[in-house]
Image (cartoon, rainbow, N blue to C red; front, side):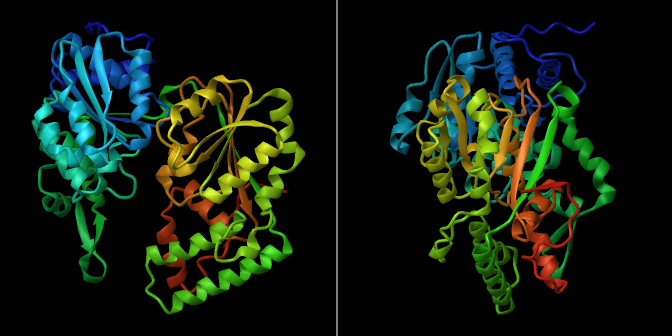
Amino acid sequence: MKEVLKIPLKATLYRHQQSACRFACERFGILPSETHSNGVALLMEMGCGKTITSIAIVGILYQYRHIRRILITAPLSILSVWEQEFARFAAFPYQLTVLKGSSTQKKEQLSKLHGNDLQIAVVNYESAWRLEKELLAFDADLIIADEAHKIKENRTAQSKAMRHLGDKSRYKLLLTGTLITNKELDVFSQYRFLNKEIFGTSFYAFRSRYFDMCGYGNHIPVFRKQMMDEFLQKLHSVAYRVTKAECLDLPQITEEIRTVELEPKAMKLYKQLEKECFAELAGSEISAVNVLTKMLRLSQMTGGYLKTMPEVSLLSAQQNWMLCPIFWTPCLQKKKKLVILARFVPELDGIQELLKRKQIGYASVRGGVSNRAEEIRRFQEDADCCVFVGQIAAAGLGITLTAASTMVFYSLDYSMSNFEQAKARIHRVSQTENCLYIYLTAKHTVDTKILRALRDKADLAKMLVDDYRNGSNPFQEGVWNANTEHV
């Protein structure tokens, strides 16, 4: 008979979250298990509740008197989420400080964390390596690395600092829904922090065992498929993995591609720019960075803004679509909320100006917004705040936007991780309605190619380079059968 875990929480966990807690307690030695580890990975897909599960594990460890000090590292944009979620769910005494300000101020804040309650310091990854000496002295019993794919690069200062901190800590939790964001090599640095016994301490020994070095100069690591079973066995020996499809009775997802047409003048300029970008490749090094840089100019143009071509500051196809009454009527009449995401700042400015003209209340999270928590709260709770306008890179992590069930991608960036994270903002715990994703793509432009790569989980940069080397124009649409709605 399984021992019943007493979880000091102000909420009832879902079954998969309870299973994750039990898995961690078994590996940590609190519950009987043949496998022990001082580090546990919660590989829970976005929307499955990694944060509340971690707080539950913290509460269990605290009531067993195994921990007194905790260090939480996370991307800067989601530090406040931890403060809010602890206040919302923790049913045990604690003192939590989000380290802010200059390095001197953060050191001072850290020095004041003492007392009988559980002491929790929350800091962003970029600051953690700069405060390594002070954080080592803080001597955390538990380190939680949130969105741990941020430490996937083995040689960065923040990855090295996390390893040093992890080697001293008694327990570690690694949280991510995207452990492998690009290639299997991503695993090493994260697991080196988590438990150095899994894949060892040498990156080169790890690479030699699981990869063949191929390509010109033997610089391209290619995973050995015959090692897959061993690789996965080690990976999952200390990891609890779950997807939304497996664990949650979440609403269904529908995706619509709204194909719009550039105005004749804009299309003429676009084709001119496309031709120039392709011609420029012939006289330069063909690399992923080079190709993506040129594609960036084309993406800016389809959105209606390109600084180097001021004559393109005309209404884009996407903007024309958003002016359509059909788009806004449900929002205005039924108070049905909407999330609109875009990549570029001028696009966000244009969307917000449109909302102001239509006198539609909105909240916004983008680079430079300091009161993120208040903007999110207003969208979630204020009935008059109908629209959330977000920059994909800034609004894709650690926030909940379930007051809406429709998300419009006005434009897309090229990151698969950003794309998946952004989509998970509305399709997660507490969502009660079916979710609709709308992608605005300009016909016969790079928009289609970008969306194809993201939806197929393909490497966009590799796709473009391969197209060029095969003799085709990487910036042209190509052939792709997809269900689209033409506007």
